[in-house]
Amino acid sequence: NHIKSLEGKTVLITAGPTYEALDPVRFIGNHSSGKMGFSLAEEASMRGARVILISGPSAQTTDDKNIELHKVTSAREMLNKVFEFYDHIDIGIASAAVADYAPKEVAKEKIKKNDENLTIELVKNPDILKTMGEKKTHQFLVGFALETQNEEENAKGKLEKKNLDMIVLNSLRDEGAGFKNDTNKIKIFTKTEKKEFDLKSKNKVAVDILDFVEAQLLK
Ligand code: PMT
Image 1 (cartoon, rainbow, N blue to C red):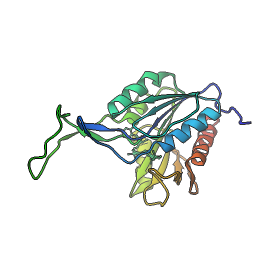
Image 2 (cartoon, protein in one colour; image 1 turned 120 degrees about the horizontal axis):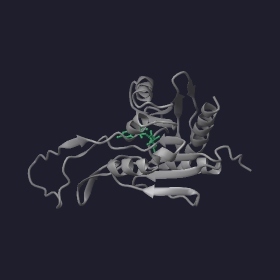
Image 3 (cartoon, rainbow, N blue to C red; image 1 turned 180 degrees about the horizontal axis):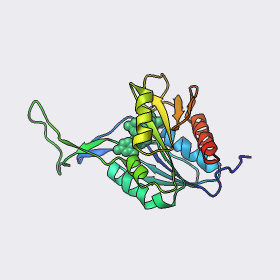
């Protein structure tokens, strides 16, 4: 008995971490489980949207046949997959925790244990969401900001710099928020508004985020 409030809309969601290979057995990654992104995908699907979910390595699964799930590994793969669809989406939500840097070279063989110190050179990865913002024509873009300090200032900075319509702040200083947990605590910012939400399940956080998006689209 859900109202199909996103019928006719295409929603693209990035989720999970990215893994940046060091050698055939190791990578640089982070603690994202993909839960936030999968919750958003399932909620958007219940609302009748076409849902494209682009996820980094994650143990999350979904039974929802309506969700088009694309699995990727690295930030570059995620970027390429996003831009296969970008022109044709109405709403883009970036909940992935994308690695900002990747090893400059991927060793062909397993790196051997030799010296006391090992230095690995890293190079900047593409910023997927920033690139989406630069190429924005009609898309409504929602970013996330995962912060540990100067949270609001940093979130608003990202809203501006990445040319977003809305940003969802979660702070690792709030207990039960951020990575892995089944719960999250968020604040939403647009250029003119701010709304703070209580700690709740990621499924319910997804409801709040999509309600907020829909309200913005009606403006
Ligand atoms: O997956 P879970 O365990 O459920 O955890 C959810 C979450 C904490 C990962 C999620 O709620 C979240 O905050 N995702 C964004 C994490 C992040 O990398 O934030 P950021 O402040 O570093 O990045 C800002 C925005 O730019 C994000 O929308 C991010 O997806 C995007 N970005 C960042 C870097 C990059 N190279 N490309 C990007 O697209």
